[in-house]
Amino acid sequence: MSTFAGDGFLRPKPPRILIPGSAENNIWYLRRDSDTVIVFVHGIFSDSRACWLTEDGEGEYWPSLVSRDPRFDEASIYLGGFHTALDSRDYTVRHCAGELFAAISRGAASVLDKRRIVFVCHSTGGIVTRYMLESRSAQFAEKDIGILLIASPSRGSALATRLRFLSDYFGNGLAKQLESGNDSLDELDDRFWRLIHERRIRRLSGMEAFEHHFVLHSKFVNTKSRVVPKESAERYFPPARLLPHTNHFSCVKPNGPNHPAHLLLVDFCIQFGLGVQTELRHTRSRVGQTIAELRRDLDLLDALIESLPAESPQRHEEERNREQLMNNLRAERPLAGFRRL
Image 1 (cartoon, helix red, strand yellow):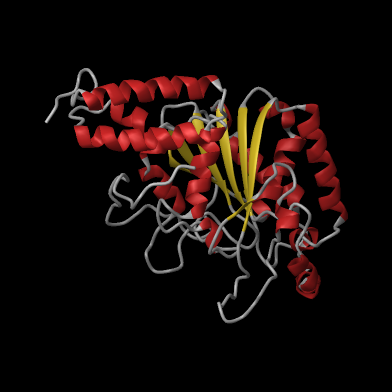
Image 2 (spheres, helix red, strand yellow):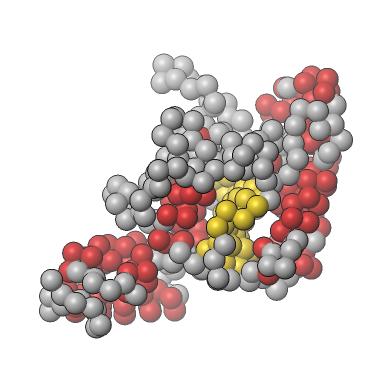
């Protein structure tokens, strides 16, 4: 696992971070000249602003955090989304998936022009993204696709079932589809399993995670229920990871680089090789590297090696890089081409 003490390796937060307006979806947050893009997809009754923005007054916004993290220096960032409201009535998963697909394929330089696409999905956003990938698998067949499902009710939510009277009152089709045992959700589950086993998207990778506590939580009250329990969140890419000290909403609102959701994204990208930069590779190209920075690179490289399969070629390559780095430290000199203190 890639963990870091503090946030000193991040680029400084600007006085005002870039945050989209309410209900402003399907826009580029950061466009870079690379083959990798991270697409954030929000959940029901949310948008690209509210879903990823912290609620504790610190003003952190997850796409901004990713943009300032040098480990993601090769990634563009796109804010994907779909129409969702109490009165959206018969605007169902199928319509949401169609809206998202149309957005990421629109324009001269679209998301679909990238070779590596990582979808970061919260709750219903995971269902919408799975529907899109399955129903339009031919458009993704030759790409590297990663899907990170965070608190996504792949088998439905008992809470949605208990609140059925609200979805009935408002006639909200999307909310009805989130109920446990919903026929359309079960059908999508079967279809997505076939997509995986038939390898219609050959380079499809995924990871799942779920919240720790119910939304209303107190250490003095033993509340075992969750909006999305492990049984529903862990479906296609087990084992699902528990995100400690989070609820259904805070699990996608990192307040810093050591938040479990941000570390999950780092680990996912490294594990499946989806274009994430390591801090080591970033600093190799930086003039004026010091001995202290080399020691920090060594710690980062150790974390990367630990996350790779034991006999993988990439691990062997990184172990050779580590040996070279150790030689530089022993000689008290930086990598070739950089000045020493």
